[in-house]
Length: 84
Image (cartoon, rainbow, N blue to C red; front, side):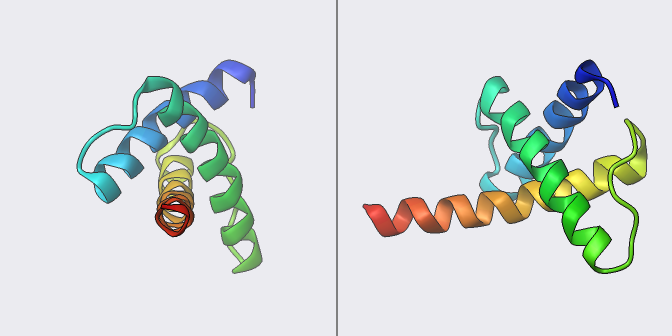
C-alpha cells in the first residue's frame, strides 16, 4: 500500500475506533496514528487467527484496522489510567 493509502485508512479506522471506545474523536493526527497502529495490530491479530491482513483501502481492511484500533485504544486507556 502507498503512504497516502495508509494515511487514509488510518484516519478512517482511527476515527471509527475512537468513536466506538470514547464516543468522541481523539483529534485528526492522533486518529491517523491510532488507525495506522491499529491496522498493523489488527493485521497481525487476523493473520495469527488465520485471516487475511490489511491489503488496501477496502471494507475488509477498514474492519481489520478498526478492530486493531479498538484493541490499541483499550490498551492505551488501561496504561494511562494506571499512571494517574
